[in-house]
Amino acid sequence: MNFEPYPFEKLNTLLQGIVPNKEYEASALTIGEPQFETPEFIQKALCENSSQLRKYPKTAGEDELRAAQRGFVKTRFGVTINDKQIIPTFGTREVLFNFPQFLLFDIKNPVMAFTNPFYQIYEGAAIASRAKVIHLNMTQKNDFKPKINEEELSACDLVILNFPNNPTTATLTLEELAEWVKLALKHDFVLLNDECYSEIYTSKPIPSLLEASLYAGNETFKNILVINSISKRSSAPGLRSGFIAGDENILKEYINYRTYIGCASPLPLQSAAAVAWSDEEHVEVAREIYKKNFEAAYEILGTPIPEATFYIWLKVPSPLEFTKRLYRDYNVKVLPGEYLARDDANGINPGKEFIRIALVEDEAKTRSALLRIKEALACKK
Image (cartoon, rainbow, N blue to C red):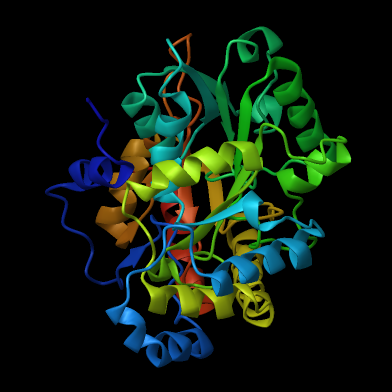
């Protein structure tokens, strides 16, 4: 299998040999990792349950965690799911990689479609599944919402959406998501929405594909799946707690597949995750921090405040050169957008004119970095 280097590897290569300006404090705005302490009550639950390390965890997850995740779906989205309609996962990266391999294994000449730009694990899963890929390009012209081509979608076996979107910050309305549900039923493809940023919103809650499925009259979630994660909402990526939920007929077979993978979450992590999934107050605190960072970006760079995520998708002249100059002169790291996308059929990379900025620090550090970015943009050297 021939996998592309990860975006951060490409960034390291791009910046190799460049000595950053030591007059400034180093600022890395590249990775989507919250730079805040995991809330104390979550850490306490982890410590209090450390004795459970002596036990093997179940592939299906413990009842406590499953109940907490179902409760989250009910509380947050108003959707009631039964125990057969959800599987706890070891974060979401692993499920995004192995679920397509499971789903597409028995299909001759499988076809996957996913948003472009994208989280690179989608591409890795397609390569591992020997699937043909259709890129759903997101550009300024389509407001970073993929244009629907039913002829292409009719050939698909699996379509992966990512809304709220990393890196463009775009969101889809309930009605727009419902149109995708109808397409999944009409053309009989599995539709999966990566909803890992659903909880990092700036004003109103973002809808889930599960809500849209009910709105479209698909009450059994046929062909519909979502994934979500605790990493962003609880500043706890190390807990590796996620889930996949939706069509129980698909999940019934997938849980058998997962038995052989050996990626069950350790019991102390499950206990800590359960209390995190069950609490909303700490998430509200995090949202307020990210909102203030976006307000600072609007004030300093004039960038619109997006509806969700903690990214800025910023159009800049010569992004690769700008990235190098920003690091060299101002000790700030950002990620070139072209590393998060691929060329379309016309040879155009929809991320090529952009950089991604992750606003994952506190307000003071964020302001400092944004002011340096502003100065770099004003400098024509």
